[in-house]
Length: 171
Image (cartoon, rainbow, N blue to C red):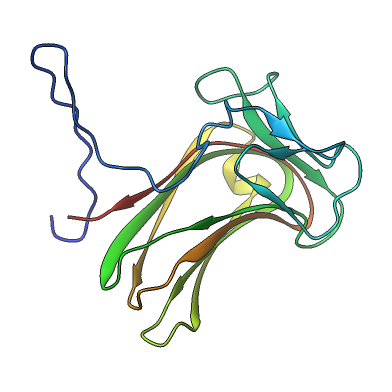
């Protein structure tokens, strides 16, 4: 299928290959930085979340031992990461989310030919999510030779968990 990421692991003699995830600390296993509120390692806080509105937790996770919890009451509070992209290349964003209340907004910014941001957005609504871990995907093409940002934010008040974030180059 054109423009769709291929996920594979080939093992022979103990080696393996897989697509390179552009997201650092994608499963939030790397710990956290700062004082409460905490930013996951390799991620930054967006807006000005209050204490306990963003944290790395072990109580809920899709895989591994940790996930990030966004329990914010204000629009656009959450986390983001700057990501490097190749020019004229299509990518797929994948992440797992569990939304107990409110709406999680995933905002992905790539660039056009002159470096202007091209924004793709997905909103994960609690009623549609059902407070269970579900995978979400979207695609974007980075045209210019510029990087972009990935945001995981509150859309109004939200209580949610996110885990296993991936940005993979499509084949």
